[in-house]
Length: 325
Image (cartoon, rainbow, N blue to C red; front, side):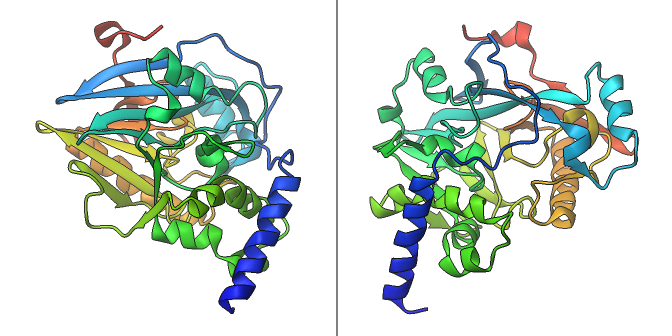
Protein backbone atom coordinates (compact mmCIF):
# COMPACT_ATOMS: atom_id res chain seq x y z
CA UNK A 1 0.00 0.00 0.00
CA UNK A 2 1.27 3.48 -0.88
CA UNK A 3 2.46 5.63 2.03
CA UNK A 4 -0.25 8.29 1.48
CA UNK A 5 -2.93 5.60 1.26
CA UNK A 6 -1.72 4.10 4.56
CA UNK A 7 -1.81 7.54 6.17
CA UNK A 8 -5.37 8.14 4.97
CA UNK A 9 -6.47 4.72 6.22
CA UNK A 10 -4.88 5.31 9.64
CA UNK A 11 -6.67 8.66 9.86
CA UNK A 12 -9.95 7.01 8.92
CA UNK A 13 -9.47 4.24 11.51
CA UNK A 14 -8.53 6.72 14.21
CA UNK A 15 -11.69 8.69 13.43
CA UNK A 16 -13.75 5.49 13.66
CA UNK A 17 -12.13 4.64 16.98
CA UNK A 18 -12.70 8.12 18.40
CA UNK A 19 -16.32 8.18 17.28
CA UNK A 20 -16.92 4.71 18.71
CA UNK A 21 -14.99 5.25 21.92
CA UNK A 22 -17.91 4.10 24.02
CA UNK A 23 -17.98 0.76 22.17
CA UNK A 24 -16.49 -2.04 24.23
CA UNK A 25 -15.28 -5.47 23.22
CA UNK A 26 -16.36 -6.47 26.69
CA UNK A 27 -15.09 -9.19 28.95
CA UNK A 28 -17.59 -12.00 29.34
CA UNK A 29 -18.68 -11.11 32.83
CA UNK A 30 -21.26 -10.78 35.54
CA UNK A 31 -22.25 -7.45 37.06
CA UNK A 32 -19.13 -5.36 37.83
CA UNK A 33 -18.89 -3.97 41.33
CA UNK A 34 -16.36 -1.64 42.88
CA UNK A 35 -14.45 -3.44 45.61
CA UNK A 36 -12.82 -1.62 48.52
CA UNK A 37 -9.22 -2.82 48.48
CA UNK A 38 -5.67 -1.53 48.82
CA UNK A 39 -4.56 0.18 45.63
CA UNK A 40 -0.84 -0.52 45.94
CA UNK A 41 1.59 -3.02 47.39
CA UNK A 42 5.37 -2.74 47.99
CA UNK A 43 8.05 -5.42 47.89
CA UNK A 44 11.77 -5.47 47.16
CA UNK A 45 13.76 -7.38 44.55
CA UNK A 46 17.41 -6.81 45.38
CA UNK A 47 17.75 -3.04 45.49
CA UNK A 48 14.54 -2.39 43.53
CA UNK A 49 11.23 -1.40 45.11
CA UNK A 50 8.47 -3.09 43.13
CA UNK A 51 5.03 -1.52 43.53
CA UNK A 52 1.97 -3.48 42.41
CA UNK A 53 -0.86 -1.15 41.37
CA UNK A 54 -4.52 -2.11 41.15
CA UNK A 55 -6.65 -0.88 38.26
CA UNK A 56 -9.65 -2.64 39.82
CA UNK A 57 -11.43 -5.94 39.25
CA UNK A 58 -14.10 -7.38 36.98
CA UNK A 59 -16.06 -10.66 37.16
CA UNK A 60 -15.13 -13.32 34.60
CA UNK A 61 -17.46 -16.17 33.63
CA UNK A 62 -14.84 -18.89 33.31
CA UNK A 63 -17.08 -21.64 31.85
CA UNK A 64 -17.88 -19.29 28.95
CA UNK A 65 -14.30 -18.11 28.50
CA UNK A 66 -11.95 -21.04 28.98
CA UNK A 67 -11.31 -23.39 26.06
CA UNK A 68 -9.61 -26.76 25.50
CA UNK A 69 -11.14 -27.97 28.73
CA UNK A 70 -13.34 -30.91 29.75
CA UNK A 71 -16.96 -30.32 30.82
CA UNK A 72 -17.19 -29.70 34.54
CA UNK A 73 -13.44 -29.09 34.95
CA UNK A 74 -13.87 -25.37 35.64
CA UNK A 75 -16.43 -26.02 38.37
CA UNK A 76 -14.26 -28.75 39.92
CA UNK A 77 -11.02 -26.75 39.99
CA UNK A 78 -12.56 -23.48 41.12
CA UNK A 79 -14.43 -25.37 43.85
CA UNK A 80 -11.17 -26.90 45.11
CA UNK A 81 -9.85 -23.34 45.37
CA UNK A 82 -12.95 -22.09 47.26
CA UNK A 83 -14.09 -20.05 44.25
CA UNK A 84 -17.23 -19.82 42.17
CA UNK A 85 -16.96 -20.38 38.39
CA UNK A 86 -17.57 -16.65 37.93
CA UNK A 87 -14.49 -15.15 39.56
CA UNK A 88 -13.50 -11.58 40.38
CA UNK A 89 -10.46 -11.02 38.15
CA UNK A 90 -7.83 -8.43 39.04
CA UNK A 91 -6.28 -6.04 36.53
CA UNK A 92 -2.80 -5.22 37.80
CA UNK A 93 0.10 -3.04 36.69
CA UNK A 94 3.58 -2.71 38.18
CA UNK A 95 5.88 0.22 38.91
CA UNK A 96 9.59 0.35 39.70
CA UNK A 97 12.51 2.75 39.50
CA UNK A 98 15.69 1.62 37.75
CA UNK A 99 18.54 3.30 35.88
CA UNK A 100 17.15 6.70 36.82
CA UNK A 101 13.80 5.92 35.19
CA UNK A 102 10.36 5.46 36.72
CA UNK A 103 9.00 2.50 34.78
CA UNK A 104 5.42 1.20 34.57
CA UNK A 105 4.55 -2.27 33.26
CA UNK A 106 1.16 -2.05 31.50
CA UNK A 107 -1.36 0.75 31.90
CA UNK A 108 -4.77 -0.60 32.89
CA UNK A 109 -8.10 0.08 31.19
CA UNK A 110 -9.30 3.67 31.67
CA UNK A 111 -13.00 3.96 30.72
CA UNK A 112 -13.31 0.88 28.54
CA UNK A 113 -14.77 -1.71 30.91
CA UNK A 114 -16.95 0.16 33.35
CA UNK A 115 -16.69 1.73 36.80
CA UNK A 116 -15.07 -1.21 38.62
CA UNK A 117 -11.91 -0.65 36.57
CA UNK A 118 -9.88 2.39 35.50
CA UNK A 119 -8.40 3.13 38.94
CA UNK A 120 -4.70 2.91 38.09
CA UNK A 121 -4.04 6.69 38.27
CA UNK A 122 -5.68 6.82 41.72
CA UNK A 123 -3.59 3.86 42.91
CA UNK A 124 -0.48 5.54 41.54
CA UNK A 125 -1.34 8.72 43.46
CA UNK A 126 -1.91 6.79 46.69
CA UNK A 127 1.57 5.29 46.25
CA UNK A 128 2.97 8.83 46.07
CA UNK A 129 3.44 9.34 42.34
CA UNK A 130 1.88 11.40 39.57
CA UNK A 131 1.20 10.11 36.09
CA UNK A 132 3.55 12.85 34.86
CA UNK A 133 6.40 11.20 36.82
CA UNK A 134 6.39 8.04 34.70
CA UNK A 135 9.29 7.93 32.22
CA UNK A 136 8.54 4.65 30.45
CA UNK A 137 5.56 2.33 30.00
CA UNK A 138 6.45 -1.26 29.06
CA UNK A 139 3.51 -2.87 27.25
CA UNK A 140 3.24 -6.65 27.46
CA UNK A 141 0.69 -6.62 24.62
CA UNK A 142 -1.82 -4.30 22.96
CA UNK A 143 -5.07 -5.58 24.44
CA UNK A 144 -6.91 -2.65 25.93
CA UNK A 145 -7.01 -3.94 29.50
CA UNK A 146 -3.26 -3.22 29.25
CA UNK A 147 -3.19 -0.15 27.01
CA UNK A 148 -6.61 1.44 27.63
CA UNK A 149 -5.19 3.52 30.47
CA UNK A 150 -2.68 5.23 28.20
CA UNK A 151 -5.40 7.68 27.19
CA UNK A 152 -8.18 9.53 29.03
CA UNK A 153 -10.37 10.80 26.21
CA UNK A 154 -8.00 12.78 24.00
CA UNK A 155 -5.45 13.32 26.82
CA UNK A 156 -2.26 11.28 27.13
CA UNK A 157 -2.32 10.07 30.73
CA UNK A 158 1.48 9.66 30.81
CA UNK A 159 2.57 12.75 28.87
CA UNK A 160 6.29 12.40 29.66
CA UNK A 161 6.52 8.66 29.09
CA UNK A 162 7.86 6.70 26.15
CA UNK A 163 5.82 3.58 25.41
CA UNK A 164 7.82 0.42 24.65
CA UNK A 165 6.31 -2.53 22.79
CA UNK A 166 7.69 -5.37 20.69
CA UNK A 167 7.91 -4.77 16.95
CA UNK A 168 5.82 -7.89 16.31
CA UNK A 169 3.02 -6.58 18.52
CA UNK A 170 3.13 -3.09 17.05
CA UNK A 171 3.09 -4.40 13.48
CA UNK A 172 0.20 -6.78 14.13
CA UNK A 173 -2.21 -4.27 15.69
CA UNK A 174 -1.21 -1.05 13.95
CA UNK A 175 -0.67 -2.17 10.35
CA UNK A 176 -3.66 -1.06 8.24
CA UNK A 177 -3.66 -4.21 6.11
CA UNK A 178 -4.20 -6.36 9.21
CA UNK A 179 -7.24 -4.30 10.17
CA UNK A 180 -8.62 -4.66 6.65
CA UNK A 181 -8.21 -8.46 6.75
CA UNK A 182 -9.52 -8.86 10.32
CA UNK A 183 -12.82 -10.58 11.03
CA UNK A 184 -15.82 -8.57 12.17
CA UNK A 185 -15.29 -9.90 15.71
CA UNK A 186 -11.62 -8.84 15.73
CA UNK A 187 -12.00 -5.38 14.20
CA UNK A 188 -12.96 -3.65 17.49
CA UNK A 189 -9.66 -4.82 19.02
CA UNK A 190 -7.79 -3.08 16.21
CA UNK A 191 -9.91 0.07 16.56
CA UNK A 192 -9.25 0.24 20.28
CA UNK A 193 -5.52 -0.32 19.70
CA UNK A 194 -5.50 2.66 17.34
CA UNK A 195 -7.54 4.77 19.76
CA UNK A 196 -5.13 4.20 22.64
CA UNK A 197 -1.74 3.86 20.90
CA UNK A 198 -1.78 6.26 17.96
CA UNK A 199 -1.69 9.51 20.01
CA UNK A 200 1.64 8.33 21.45
CA UNK A 201 2.85 7.30 17.99
CA UNK A 202 1.99 10.75 16.62
CA UNK A 203 3.80 12.38 19.55
CA UNK A 204 6.95 10.37 18.81
CA UNK A 205 6.56 8.56 22.12
CA UNK A 206 6.53 4.92 20.99
CA UNK A 207 9.65 2.76 20.65
CA UNK A 208 9.58 -0.78 19.33
CA UNK A 209 12.14 -3.43 20.17
CA UNK A 210 13.30 -6.82 19.00
CA UNK A 211 14.37 -9.44 21.51
CA UNK A 212 17.85 -10.19 22.77
CA UNK A 213 18.89 -6.85 24.27
CA UNK A 214 18.03 -4.97 27.44
CA UNK A 215 15.76 -1.92 27.09
CA UNK A 216 17.35 -0.43 30.21
CA UNK A 217 20.15 -1.89 32.34
CA UNK A 218 18.54 -4.79 34.21
CA UNK A 219 15.34 -4.82 32.10
CA UNK A 220 15.17 -7.55 29.46
CA UNK A 221 12.13 -8.21 27.22
CA UNK A 222 11.42 -11.90 26.63
CA UNK A 223 9.34 -13.22 23.72
CA UNK A 224 6.17 -15.08 24.77
CA UNK A 225 3.92 -15.13 21.68
CA UNK A 226 0.55 -16.83 21.56
CA UNK A 227 -1.91 -14.81 23.57
CA UNK A 228 -1.05 -12.14 21.01
CA UNK A 229 1.61 -12.37 18.27
CA UNK A 230 4.09 -10.08 20.01
CA UNK A 231 3.26 -10.74 23.66
CA UNK A 232 6.30 -9.97 25.86
CA UNK A 233 7.49 -10.72 29.36
CA UNK A 234 9.82 -8.27 31.11
CA UNK A 235 12.63 -9.66 33.24
CA UNK A 236 14.00 -7.37 35.95
CA UNK A 237 17.11 -8.37 37.91
CA UNK A 238 18.95 -6.95 40.90
CA UNK A 239 21.58 -8.43 43.25
CA UNK A 240 21.02 -11.98 42.09
CA UNK A 241 17.22 -11.77 42.44
CA UNK A 242 14.80 -11.77 39.53
CA UNK A 243 11.16 -11.08 38.80
CA UNK A 244 9.39 -11.81 35.52
CA UNK A 245 6.39 -9.67 34.60
CA UNK A 246 4.13 -12.13 32.81
CA UNK A 247 1.31 -10.00 31.39
CA UNK A 248 -1.44 -12.37 30.23
CA UNK A 249 0.26 -15.76 30.35
CA UNK A 250 -2.72 -16.95 32.40
CA UNK A 251 -6.19 -15.76 33.40
CA UNK A 252 -7.28 -18.29 36.03
CA UNK A 253 -4.87 -19.46 38.72
CA UNK A 254 -7.26 -22.18 39.92
CA UNK A 255 -7.61 -23.75 36.48
CA UNK A 256 -4.48 -22.99 34.47
CA UNK A 257 -1.88 -23.73 37.14
CA UNK A 258 -3.52 -27.15 37.47
CA UNK A 259 -3.81 -27.62 33.71
CA UNK A 260 -1.59 -25.30 31.61
CA UNK A 261 -3.12 -26.66 28.38
CA UNK A 262 -6.37 -24.81 29.13
CA UNK A 263 -6.70 -21.73 26.91
CA UNK A 264 -9.06 -18.75 26.74
CA UNK A 265 -11.16 -17.08 24.07
CA UNK A 266 -8.92 -13.99 24.19
CA UNK A 267 -5.92 -15.93 22.84
CA UNK A 268 -5.06 -15.00 19.24
CA UNK A 269 -3.19 -18.32 18.84
CA UNK A 270 -4.38 -20.70 21.58
CA UNK A 271 -1.89 -23.50 20.84
CA UNK A 272 1.07 -21.11 20.92
CA UNK A 273 -0.32 -19.52 24.11
CA UNK A 274 -0.43 -22.94 25.81
CA UNK A 275 3.15 -23.67 24.74
CA UNK A 276 4.34 -20.30 26.06
CA UNK A 277 2.51 -20.85 29.35
CA UNK A 278 4.00 -24.31 29.91
CA UNK A 279 7.48 -23.04 29.15
CA UNK A 280 7.02 -20.05 31.46
CA UNK A 281 5.71 -22.24 34.30
CA UNK A 282 8.58 -24.70 33.95
CA UNK A 283 11.25 -21.99 33.87
CA UNK A 284 9.79 -20.11 36.85
CA UNK A 285 9.50 -23.29 38.93
CA UNK A 286 13.03 -24.43 38.09
CA UNK A 287 14.52 -20.94 38.49
CA UNK A 288 12.63 -20.25 41.73
CA UNK A 289 12.27 -16.58 40.77
CA UNK A 290 9.39 -14.19 41.42
CA UNK A 291 6.62 -13.78 38.87
CA UNK A 292 4.01 -11.03 38.54
CA UNK A 293 0.90 -11.45 36.39
CA UNK A 294 -1.73 -8.91 35.42
CA UNK A 295 -4.77 -11.06 36.22
CA UNK A 296 -3.67 -13.02 39.26
CA UNK A 297 -5.44 -11.81 42.42
CA UNK A 298 -3.88 -8.50 43.50
CA UNK A 299 -0.99 -7.96 44.00
CA UNK A 300 -0.39 -10.81 41.57
CA UNK A 301 3.17 -11.57 42.76
CA UNK A 302 4.52 -14.89 43.99
CA UNK A 303 6.35 -18.13 43.22
CA UNK A 304 5.25 -21.37 41.60
CA UNK A 305 6.30 -24.96 42.17
CA UNK A 306 5.79 -28.13 40.14
CA UNK A 307 2.99 -30.26 41.59
CA UNK A 308 2.14 -33.48 39.78
CA UNK A 309 1.00 -32.71 36.24
CA UNK A 310 0.42 -29.06 37.12
CA UNK A 311 1.82 -26.34 39.36
CA UNK A 312 1.12 -24.84 42.77
CA UNK A 313 0.86 -21.08 43.28
CA UNK A 314 2.41 -19.35 46.31
CA UNK A 315 1.36 -15.69 46.52
CA UNK A 316 3.71 -13.18 48.12
CA UNK A 317 3.56 -13.20 51.94
CA UNK A 318 1.34 -10.31 53.02
CA UNK A 319 2.34 -10.42 56.68
CA UNK A 320 6.08 -10.15 56.13
CA UNK A 321 6.08 -7.38 53.53
CA UNK A 322 2.95 -5.38 54.35
CA UNK A 323 0.17 -3.96 52.24
CA UNK A 324 0.03 -0.29 51.23
CA UNK A 325 -3.14 1.44 52.36
